[in-house]
Image 1: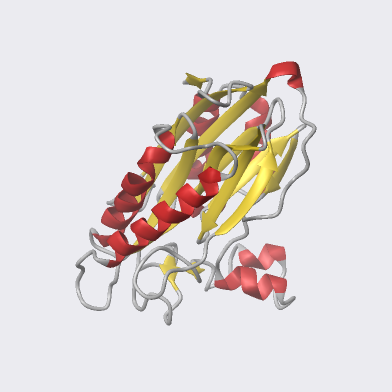
Image 2: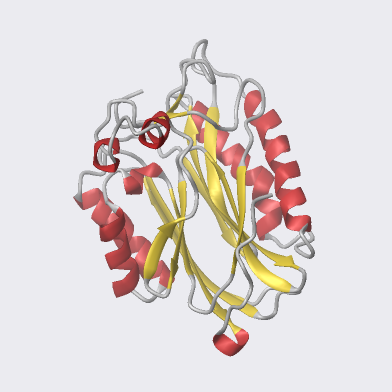
Length: 283
């Protein structure tokens, strides 16, 4: 799909999205948003239907961003996202579930935003779904996982390789859901000609490492075809969790970028909150 957003005419976007229940699940608790200005993935937690409702609720609340109904100019997008995440938190917190399995969801993605007349990716993250940027052929994970294994990695207690098999690798430390609202991380990254943004649930990154993901993104130029192939490869690698992929390609007038990066404003294969944050929840 193509889009040249009004008010950000210097950038033309093409995108594709794919989702799959996975090889071992009976319910897909992932949801995504893809259109116009906003691209998000939400990975629900809570077991039974709670996770599905939580992720669907978050995406429904964020939907005005994709419809271009908010003001993307002069930093207003960050305030819009913050306001909508607060509303999503309240609605997810109100979901009725069985005792001990409170609903929650991760959220990660980007909004195309204007900063002083310059187009930027506003990257937003809560939880362990991820947002990557491929620029000039190099893949970078922009978001930072809110997870126990990320904390252990940053403390030097485990290696990056060990994070892929650690028994607590699916435990998230921030999410939308019961309890006090979790603070989302924000980054402003300038849009460059040829940028490729990948937003995904941990069902992709749990099966494919960054080198495997980068290979597909480099080999498949069409956004929809690349999203479909990443899902297929994750399924072939085991497909132990729900898998969701959103890919966004950017082309800019003049083919240049000159702006600097700005500071931010139930089973072993299942995302779940840390006990003290969202006790007992499972996706």
